[in-house]
Length: 380
Ligand code: GLY
Image (cartoon, rainbow, N blue to C red):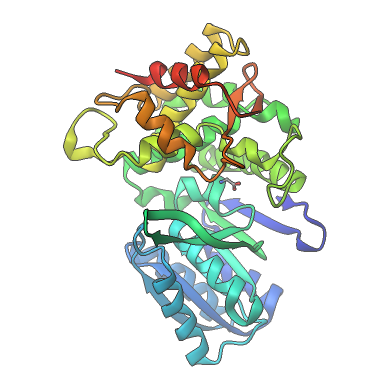
């Protein structure tokens, strides 16, 4: 599937067993060069061997760089270490960096590629549902930074489009059920914005397959990823650098559920099922709660019917995602956290809320009662 970005256009290849084609695709794009492969050190060896074997068979010379993937290691220190390794091997600017793993590996690998010798090509090989349907497409790369007021996510980074995205849905088999479900939250989010980018109904498609999605048939997973990438790439093609705050297909609409979600994610004691040993929330779990909160805000703004809000909650629940959370801090505390969200501009928050079942709009400086209604919708 092409991502239409003029001279930065690229393909997203989706399917079962596609990792075996990595070497030939890289040889076609870059020649029989060296390849620097950033690898999530928790990936099963079968996945790593498949990717590295494909590169070697196609005549590429492989350097492996295992990294431990977490929000703490998504740092300038990790990027520095990878850049040091690239520099030590004399990696050339036309030779690819390949990111094999989930969102953290893709973001750090992409950032290292963006900055090494002012920009080397990057190939994204996402291995989680979340990174297949969202993070690997669109060129956002970066690392977190610990500031005097704590860890700030993605504070340092660059837009750097990949040369290729290769999503092998068979790699999803090694995800825990919890991680897989978390990725589905981004899929539901995409379902809620299809009308903004004139894409076919996705919410209904997910709704009628909630049981089969969990069992993970190759064909169903391929179609799931494909339908989501279509939505994501349409948004990216319309507003690559998130500069268009007003447009219907502004990249900002991908933030649906995230402003609420980031606030929830930062409260490290919240858990998806009330069991403290399951805290903190995974990103996708916080997004699921954020989507329900955004629906609550949409209802309060008179833009969404109760039945539509109930439907979104029902879909999330039927795939096993949380839609209510216990021990929620006071709304004032959460509003203060939201004020620090990166989408705030000039002290004014920008909130994306549903406007009907399949479209959203950006509200600049939303009144507190909308935010309050959002948080009340998820309070257990
Ligand atoms: N994940 C949001 C974006 O790519 O803009």
